Structure formats: structure tokens, C-alpha cells
Length: 218
Figure 1 (spheres, one colour):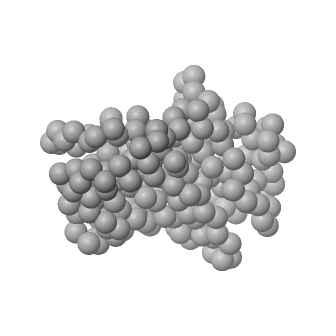
Figure 2 (spheres, helix red, strand yellow; figure 1 turned 120 degrees about the vertical axis):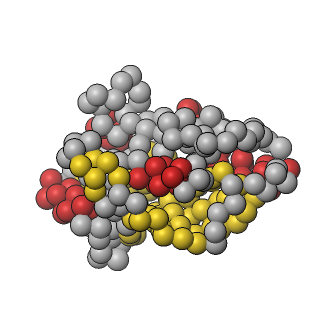
């Protein structure tokens, strides 16, 4: 099988632009903002050169790839920020997790908010797209936007995300030729206006999914 491109060599790209919103693909291993994130490639610097000074309206974890909404208009960014905080923007992620999940489920488990120093409500819905041996490929819809919400919720359910070094699986399982990254991708967002942006699954994740299908890993 042809080797997938290294995620570390992947660069951001503009997915689409409409109504003052620019959707950008953020690779795994890139941070959105520079402050306090260490010496990693960052989206802010890339946007200065490639998107006319647009700035991100929200964040993705460094290890998560996927669509990030940006704008050069502060009012548009503010509106997007309000919609995100109010849960009005639909978010779709794809994740490969350990174990065989239910066909679908809802996780309602409060999470600790370090900034607010209290527990906050958190809701994550998921649907199993397919079982691949002892793994499950999920479509995940976080209804709230807590830090590391998907990763924490799935680990708490006993189905940690493959490649997660922070919220690890509680049982060891060797995954053949797993890519050196978190198996979590923000694939689509839909705004209350009906505008939507999609970010196809990265080549490295497609290649690994296909390899698992062919090998019949247990």
C-alpha cells in the first residue's frame, strides 16, 4: 500500500470563503494561536501571509486537524464567537476510538473548567459509522464547546481516541501502522445562517482507515 503523506509536512489551505468568513484547514501539529503554545507552527502567522490578515474566531487542539473559521472583520469574528458560545454552530468530527461502541449515544458528563474553577455542563453525541475489528469509527457532534471535551468524554466512556497521549486508553492495544497523531478531525461546521464548510479527512487518516479495513485488525 502506498505510504500516506506525513502529517508534519502538511500545510494549511483555504477551504472556502463567504459572508466575510474564511474557512481554513488546520493540520495536526499546528497551533491556532502563538501565545503560550510553545515552538510549533501556528495558524496566525500563516493567515497573515495567505488570508489578508484574517484572524481565527475559535480554537482547535494542536493535535486535532480540521476546519477553523476565520475573518478579517472583527464584527464577523465576534458574531462567530457568540454563536460558538451559545451552541448555535453545528460541529461534526470524525474519530477512531478503541473498542466497540454502541451504534449511537449521548454523553452528558460535566467537565472541570480550569479557568472558571468549577464544573460545567458538557454534552457530546456520537454515531458509529463502522466497526473495524476492535475499533470504532465515529461521527461525533459536540453540543457544547468545552476544552478537550470529545477526548475526555470518549475516554470516560471507555473508548479513548486512538493516538491520544494525554487521555489514554486504559487497556493496551496495538494498532498497526497508526499515524503519529491524534485520530480526531473536525470535518464540518454549519452556521445558523445555513452556510457550511467541509474539510475532507486527511490523507494520512484515510490511508490508515483503509489499511485497518484490509488487515481486519482485532
